[in-house]
Length: 540
Image (cartoon, rainbow, N blue to C red; front, top):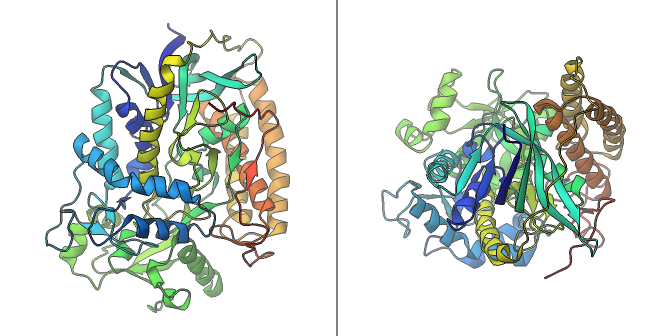
């Protein structure tokens, strides 16, 4: 049985970011792609809305940039926003070349030839989509392409334990691979690589209610932090305003495109409430809509609000939202005749591993792209459909930089073998499942949409106890998938809490009743956490 692997590039994660990077690299580069479950399982697969890009003659780069900066509530990096928006159209053309089938425009209102929808925060129709299953179309298309490339080896059902780093003579860190648990054989394998890329997605499974699949456990963020990377803006967790409220609907998201096409948010009595909160009503940015729904639910003591698009024709609804229509119908809800019960749920991690415009992290040889990374694009709030755009653009930028540096990057030294000689199999798996539930409950209660100093203090005390207990468990028993994910979630929860405690204001996705106002004098800057083992990379 082979336990050691050597590749040129090791990509951890198989969503839009990871697969687009792999496909953009030349065919003579040996690439490994690591997936925790099946290759396509991840946030990309479930992204319904679309990808924002300037594709219509009535739109402009300047307008897209301005909208993104406004949504980011003063914390976006303007250079990053400009860079991403300018590269948007090119990346849509690349997806078309790869075979993604976007929805065509039936009339002449769009000069792009494609149907462009408008979502919250956008001043123009600029969201290109494949009906209401854009992520599925993108992910499955990229999967087919990746499986056809001889230089790309796919390792499904593998979960990374930790990154492997080595100190140079100049005392700077270099990433040279990772220890990875093969979930089929239950053996730990060593993967060495000249370049390592984190593309593991976000961390919304740290919350009790989320739109994300089970794999979104913040693995890349936690691993990078433990390895010595700085982390930024983890207090900004985006809660999607509209997830289906039904006892059997675990994580089903109701796309924002419904509101873009005219759906109304209503109280149980049928009255609209969004005009009371913002002049943009249902098309306000997600943080405003989520706060409004949360306030109405608490004010009225109700379990959910309702999203109503029944004033549109049944033909229009079924044509534009076939996934939402068919999925709701399975739960006995006909959205052409009745409103959809919805609640907010944790959806997107705006913070992450700090990178530069080449996707490089603080550690040499280590890149981060997609939701795992903090690039400065989103600021204090992500504008709708900018996430897949960021995945694609930074996948492109990382590919260009990796090609630039790979020839001068030495082969990694052999890593030490994973040592299991002092651990045993656990006979107390209930500890892992109990801690998992406790963590997600107190994060939802204390570090959710509305926060306070007291709630954050309570959460910090609890996460400290959990980290100590999980550390002991990790040191004494053989690793399992559930233990590794819990270990990562606890580290990420700690980062979110610490970041939230540092922000003494309310801005974007971070709202605290102790500091309800925005402070542009002392707080208009990213929240940066620095690990004890941080070592600045020597710039090239």
